[in-house]
Length: 350
Image (cartoon, rainbow, N blue to C red; front, side):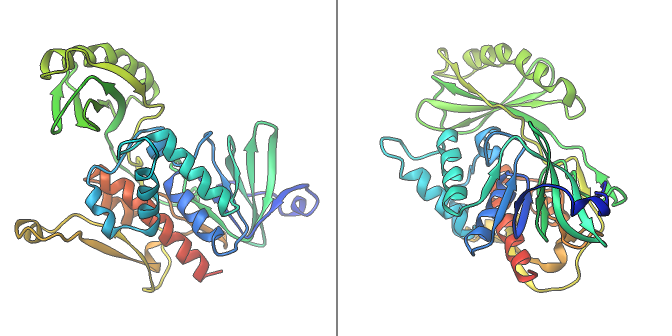
């Protein structure tokens, strides 16, 4: 992580002054920023895309198991209630509407969102964070704050000498299909050897998840678009009642868990700050109990930079990956929960 020159900070123009700056407007950063702003903190949210909550809006992920809501955060319940209250709409997920909900959260909480911006480097004085340099279309700008929270997938602000254990994760890109009525999930093997998984969304709409090669991210878009006609042809031939299947929407982004796990820099302390959903215990499942297992998040699960005032709390922290790696629904829900826990931790240390 490259630091700013101490001697120049006081002389530079300041783009804005805040109590906290959050890097990354995915679900973790969005919930964290909103939760902190709702307590009266002045919050800036730096997001490189043009929308918040990319996991649901751009990658079209969703909660397959809606009954997990009872074990999730107030933000999950608030989100689902808004989704279900859409006038003239059936219950379910509608990504553009989800993005409107996320915009409303930020606007009503008075979060200062900077779209098409990215974290460039920390500004610090005597080892203490005093702000963040961000890249924008107009050039680099300085935001001032005593606390910066890194939640973005690439982890640009992570200390360069911190150990990152590389992880091979599947890459999934989705299509929304019309004219496909499914009662249950269906898996198909494509000629190239990868899988396409169909999930029902409504009475005549489904989502097709196409698995791409994890080591071919450079060509991921090419591979994805090349497979679309092939996937549609297979669905029309192999799925009953899908002869008229057609593409309604192509997901803008692929979904994958982070390619690395951060393995050092943990805080000390066992103070509880939140929880994550965990894999249901076999005994509970076999007994038919309506119980969602959870794991308690402690202060010691959070990761700090060597620069005082920089908190590292993205989806690459071990507690999130351990709880989320085997379930897409849980991985999405846990981002809400992690964002809430990070806000609680940051507020307790402010």
